[in-house]
Length: 138
Image 1: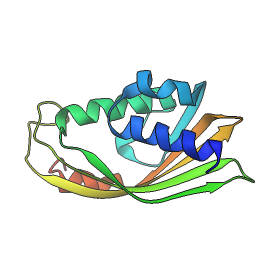
Image 2: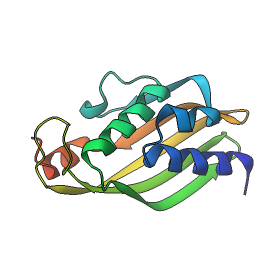
Image 3: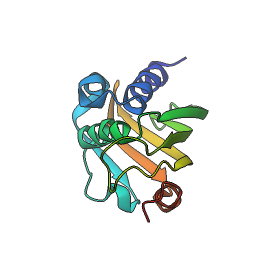
């Protein structure tokens, strides 16, 4: 397993379990960027802010968990792609409305672009509209 694969796996777990920037920063460049074409993530442009968003999400979706479907490394292009399914229900206080008790199983992909041994940019590919509907927020 390559170094960037191991770093990406460790980062992925820290991010997806709500570790926030404190748990993720050692794997990322300080100015790492974030991009997504999802309204739920509008305005989030730094990886630091995204990891904190995930941490916050897990306060009102306390049973949130991920299921890895695929993890692939492209050494030539220095990126790692992770495909997962996020599972969880809105049962905790917070979020866009009072707890709905509704759940989602939503597919997403992270593409983590490396510079040397640090993540410089991450793109999230996600259909947030379906997740928002599932959770009763739309």
